[in-house]
Image (cartoon, rainbow, N blue to C red):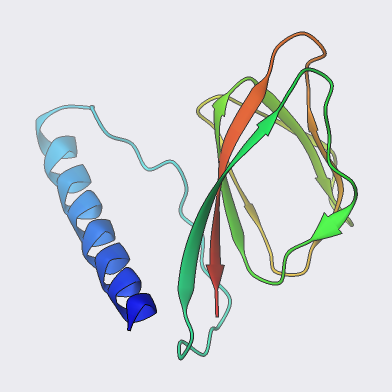
Length: 127
């Protein structure tokens, strides 16, 4: 029941954000679409969303890993150096977003700076 409520709240929140975005676009430029990406086909019976704040200190990184579901990342502070197997190395700065397909192997996930911290939000959409 908690997951159903979470999905409903997320759906309502997304609708409100999109509606607000469209209204804002008509009035001003206060809102922007940070990312739009199709999701892989999901069953939906156990659908859940998890948001994780990831903090990397100067020069920190994680070991190679993967996630079983799509990940949407939004860099809050600093810069993130990342590479998923089969894709080029990329650096995302504060205010930028990225999408990672399910089961992609993260060969690199690291702070791009050895002097400042990096923070990001990772949104996991799992079935």
